[in-house]
Image 1 (tube, helix red, strand yellow):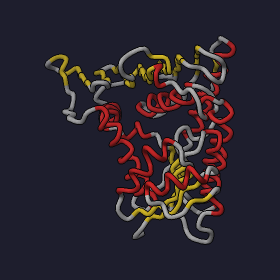
Image 2 (cartoon, helix red, strand yellow):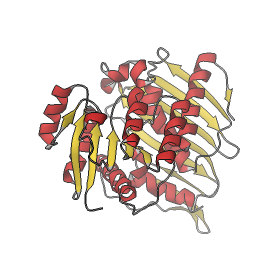
Image 3 (tube, rainbow, N blue to C red):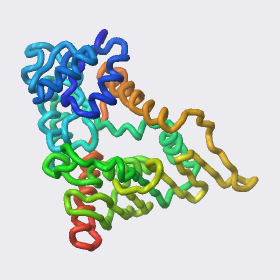
Image 4 (spheres, rainbow, N blue to C red):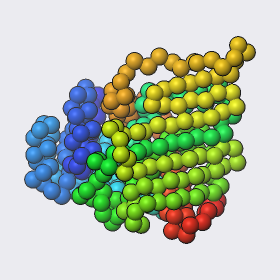
Length: 332
């Protein structure tokens, strides 16, 4: 494949700040169009990035011409519609996180991608951060022993709390901070330990249902306990996003990256050198995410299933149920 033809669905912040700037710098990638019902806004953004065509919907974008890939950057509640439209055009799909707003919808999308023979990939860019990937390598290699506890937190300052737009409307967002930050923090915690089958969940929230501003979750499988905390209400001079793992032979944490192991000589700091600043790690994660997705599109890497995102949304739903009922919720 000499050139990958990409369409961008949605002209909001994710497209403007992340995807279009990255795509504009990639060789052998051509952004053929930007799709958004607000054609005036899309035309302004498209002009900034040299996008040749603007359309109100994917069906009317370059009809009859092939699309290799579509990146879905619409509000959460519109992800299913966008993913299905992209699959119908025969495109591979990179969908912004979370995949969708319910487990039933996630299952439909995973099944549709399998039937179409196309890659559906969720843009969980934190999986491609160098520090997080180093921690996962220590876990996967067994160097930390049996991991029995994972803590994942994503705490944004109150000054950055969404005040307007679709993220403040549960109809489009699917929920509050649990859907916005919690799905990502949950995915990171579960991904680090191989997505174990979660047996039970408890969750407490602050704020109105569907517009919650903080969520505090505990989950357990047969072998590991997980604590996940997210908020839009942090009072600090910077956001905090970190993960911590405890194992029988070592521990690891991020922000900053630290890894310790129990060796014959005693407790030893085995932290790999990491020269990149935090902001650079975050930016690089998106570039690495696109590099991997494009390898799949070009047939240079095998397609993968996103079936675990169905399990993730089942956990999110259980968290809301637990918060509503004030009780532990059993899964499976």
